[in-house]
Image (tube, rainbow, N blue to C red; front, top):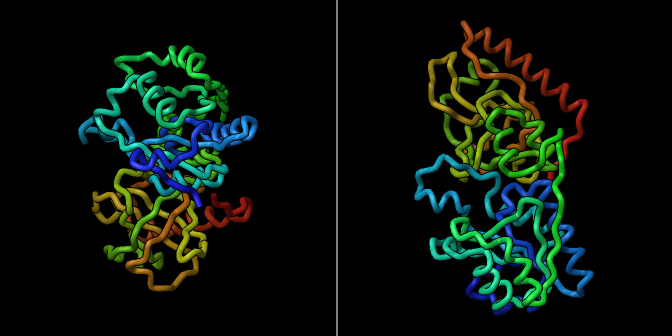
Length: 316
């Protein structure tokens, strides 16, 4: 079980760890290369790996709530995936304006050297920390030499000729390119929520849907569209398709997240379920009649079943 530490219990952490510092939002393939290398680096130096992260994304704090920025992972999701990479300990720093004011070297002196006496620091290809307005990150290497810890850097990973990053994954989600998003992540992007009462329009089309209220409002949803998904309910996985967005055929401009689970007849109101996005099928559009929409839903289901017939259902 991964152990999450705070600054209040930093003295309980072993001295001389090898660390990597980052937000690790998405814990994508690039992050996982860093975390796996962190474990190898620590083993080489005869010590333990330690991932250092923040409890809140800096952009959410520094914008004072005036940002439309969204996250790829909840903290629980981040830590679960990090554990799969062999990380046993995480130092979670509560991000405040005071922490934000620290330059890279101030942060390193106070925490990495002063509190942890680290043996090594592993940096990702675009990894930086500390206040950018007082940027002294280039002096980290001098500090490392003076303080006696080693520094290594990890290169980038390309996907379709693009350097994998959380920013690129957000861009892919924003344009509905779930295939590229998932390939950069190395797993299927998912959201979790509670099944709530809806307008029950799907029942009239013989396509009943579960309406989902997302558990985390700061987590990013893919762009509006119809998607092939899997649904996890009580640790069981089901094939499904979902609609992200409005219902223009029925004059509803309200954006919703609703899922039709294939061959499923259980009452799941109030349950927390998870949706994993696999493939974008089409844009949302207005149909002239409910029957025309129903016909399209049959075609959407066929497209989903064809996807499942040619792809394996996987999870992180």
